[in-house]
Image (cartoon, rainbow, N blue to C red; front, side, top):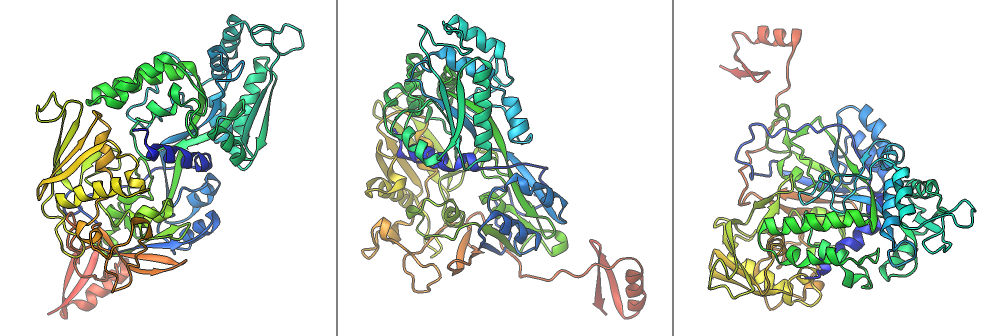
Length: 611
């Protein structure tokens, strides 16, 4: 289960995470009185992703009303002008991630827990949030973000939020750190000289400020320390392969709330494994909870393990989490309402596209063209062959999974009505040591060619991902023992190990059409490059709430709502809302209409119906 999925997530997030910015005022939500139910959508007729590169250009496009939503997190430096603009709202969401410094636990004297804890106590995280982030972040101690239900944040009897240099100095003294040669700097236990190099990314002002705060905390402890901005990729490569460093600034972001990565990221056996365990952390007590976290089947068991592992981790401080910042979204409010501030994606996410709708004054809730900015063009409509988040903005509208996450990060059954998880203890038919999931699927879902979506499609998808060499969706399916359709709408999935996390391994993956992918002419997964705008394209059959209607490379991608979507609702024919009449104009219209028409007042509008 040492999933490449998690490894890839960590690696990619490190490259970009510390550059994520954000925050600000509240979100205006308007889901009131929408037709249908909580899963019903979409309400817009068209969804357009316009390729607009650069923060300046995207903000200008929003102000000029050429887009309705900036499709990326916005730099806080734009906040004042966005707040002053008419018909523009800004919203914030606490980031599912953080900025931190990692400490080389293999290197003297950083191998002393007392040194790492002393720095954690001496570092002023409140000042980082106030100064570096201008109040747009909050202190964090645990490696599991505070937005995650598995976090221990706020449950410990102590915090490292405020600078406590005296406590840090006490820890160092008790461990044998002292200024033996009276040069003003502490020597390590045994009287050995040392100094500390704090490295931070020269491309990020936030990173530079954090690096300086860390160096200042060390100097306050009478430790010879310097912070040096340097090339991010150069030191990241050293971390990948466990080469030399002292303290380095990084960032991480997470796309789900699963925490099985705790069993790998800081596992002692991965202290010399490339791409893992940057602090080279080794701790037997931490490792002792690993099996329960990975192989516990009940939520209570994995939750207990996650909490205990964090309790040890925060005390040992192999890394120091400096802040969890908030992320800024910006959108127009003059035409649409119902924007969803997703706990993971903010406003520019799947749920906004699904629930946003025209205001009543614009003839809503149905209809309209909702416009995003997309900083980069889509590189392929093959969702398996792209790692671009901007490509995923488009492709995610086209495919469905067994289970999805709602805007609060909670699991929601999507292509299924229900499921049961069983081990041998629950059902003697399940082999000892295995986990079996029985999914009961919806019976009204169809592909865009009208073919029903069945358990055969779901089973085929999992087997296809697992067996296709190099397919990124198969990297974490090595424990998949079997996936098959027991009936047309009942799916059986079995793993040859026990784990709570197996559920998300299979249920979050996109389901693909078996009848298309088994066509003898269908290419290898990584050679498939469909053109969905080509009427003769034989293999682009999807399931999502939108379909591709037009694409111009480098300019835009247009999608149209899928009228046959299984949670969809029929859109009435588009109508132009009547213009409102007020004051003297209203009275003049009414006076002139008497005798010639019946005057009807409806929802603040005047409708003149000829007799």
